[in-house]
Length: 110
Figure 1 (tube, rainbow, N blue to C red):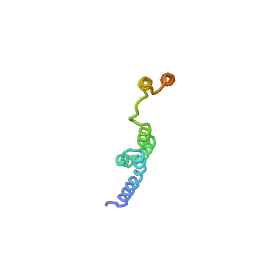
Figure 2: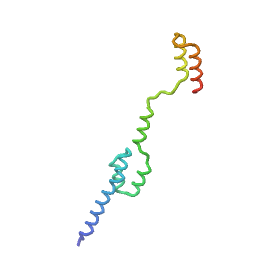
Figure 3: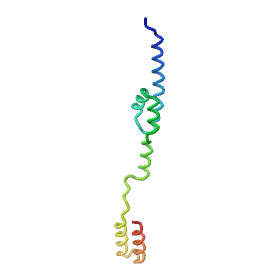
Figure 4: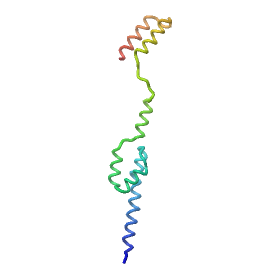
């Protein structure tokens, strides 16, 4: 004869496991990882998934840092800057003293 009590225990266990799996899945989603994958991982191995996701870096924070630094930013090129000031000097926009001062300043930045 089948004992329904054991089936009830299994259903309760699965419901608790499904609820606990939401914890690492939510943390993963906030950190920029896929919710469904981490929910399944949490459902099967809840304690390990929670520790694992706590140790992983935040993908969203990395994106914010990259955006703040400006991924399209060009590196500083002293030679081009000196050429620009040389053109200004040749056109008479700046004096020779100003050009030499700026040239020395740019060369110390290298």
